[in-house]
Length: 203
Ligand SMILES: Cc1cc2nc3c(=O)[nH]c(=O)nc-3n(C[C@H](O)[C@H](O)[C@H](O)COP(=O)(O)O)c2cc1C
Image (cartoon, rainbow, N blue to C red; front, side, top):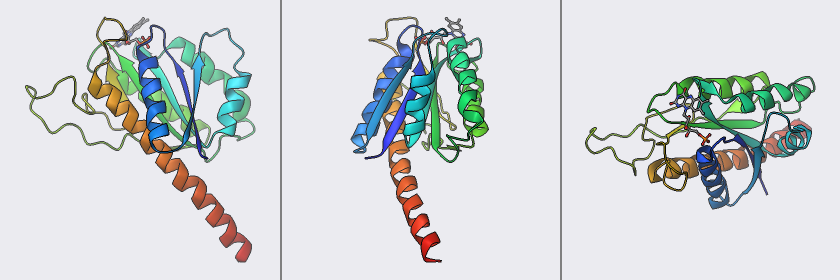
């Protein structure tokens, strides 16, 4: 069974809704999600980092705060330098999602931070893989997939309301599709690794 870790922070619960939907997408692809909530900057990150090391792929999630990943997520990212020196995450698959109040809100910068984190570990980035919605502004609604039109990862938008209500259905479905995409890619990637091993041994 292929495992996909979902390492995320959520200050007020909106990004957490997306993490749950990403996990649903992994399950829909027949694989195993491992939800890893980053609770606070003061926690011991070692067990969480170990679980990512064990996983075949990781999907990072953070709310956009002040135009970048939340400070708590950044403290976690810095703590991953413990495995940077061992290359333990090298060649693993990675992807990411963020969520903020504004439609743009500088979410692209937060997603760029997640891709750089993956690149520093030598991981391979899986983008969202969904075309931006081909609809008029009037047609664009809460059910629209990839509502804000992001490419490198999921960019969701939440109003100032309870996480039970927002982010809307389209963003939740986009999160599910991201989980499904990464899980399927991880199955191909891990199966491909055994084929490469066999070819290497035969040569
Ligand atoms: C400290 C702080 C900074 C924020 N900065 C931004 C921002 O730069 N852009 C934006 O669109 N929303 C910003 N927001 C709004 C949050 O991104 C939004 O409320 C989001 O849904 C919070 O996700 P969470 O519930 O998972 O913490 C900010 C919120 C906080 C608390």
